[in-house]
Structures are given as C-alpha cells and as structure tokens.
Image 1 (cartoon, rainbow, N blue to C red):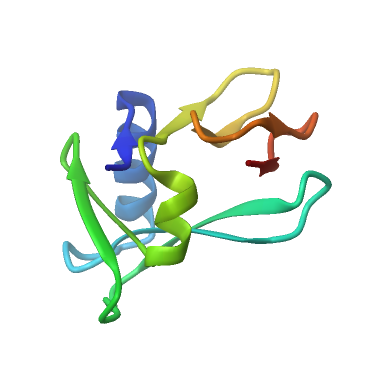
Image 2 (cartoon, rainbow, N blue to C red):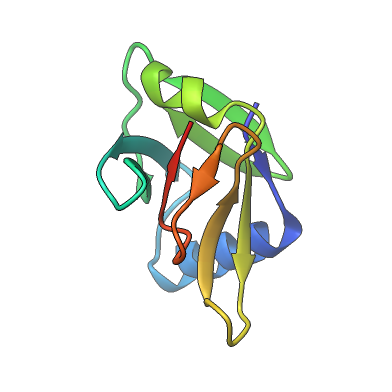
Length: 108
C-alpha cells in the first residue's frame, strides 16, 4: 500500500483543480536510478494505466505505480510540506536505509 497524508491530499486536490485535470487523472509515483543516494522518486499526474500497474486509493487519492517501483515504495506515505525548510512533496519511506540531504533520493 502507498499512503497519502492529509497534507498531500490537500495539495494534490489544489493542483488538480488549478490544472483543470478531471477525475480520470491520478497520481503516478515511480522510482528510477539517480540522485546522490542511488534512487530517485518521481511524481506526476497521469490518466493512462498500464497492464502491470499497482493501483491504490488512500484518503480519497488514487495512486498508481509500476510493479518494480512498488517494491521500493511499499508502506510509503506521500506527504507535503509548505514550510520554510523544504517546501514540496516528500516520501516517508520505511524501506529507505539512507536518504540524501535534500531528501530527493534514497538507498535501500
């Protein structure tokens, strides 16, 4: 399961409304190679599901990821911070053994 915190839900709703995205769109998360810790999170809106996608709904938000990425994201919570110390979405990932200083990449 991939979880969505209230802070992320509110920001996602705001972004979908301001971008005029319909209810057919969802949040796609994935993990790719890169970053100073080895793996990088990707987050975007999408409206096309693929055959091997893993689909979750938490807190009223539909989240989709590919199977390979899900192995890294299992039990992760998507959060949003509007504070001065790093504004934006971030992943609270219990599978990460270390993260970089900016929080954009991780290792398992």
